[in-house]
Length: 67
Image (cartoon, rainbow, N blue to C red):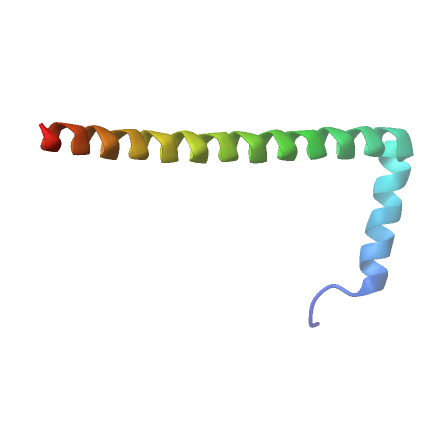
């Protein structure tokens, strides 16, 4: 009783394949891939925005202290 065997996983995958079909699974996989790609891009752009905001605030502090 130590977990799921490879045969159980194969049976589950075969049932899912029969229920949904290959075309629908391919579409779901593509949609999921696009969603993950979009999420990664938004995380990178948010990270770059945060970095630029912190560097802008650091530069503005230097400018005010030089005066």
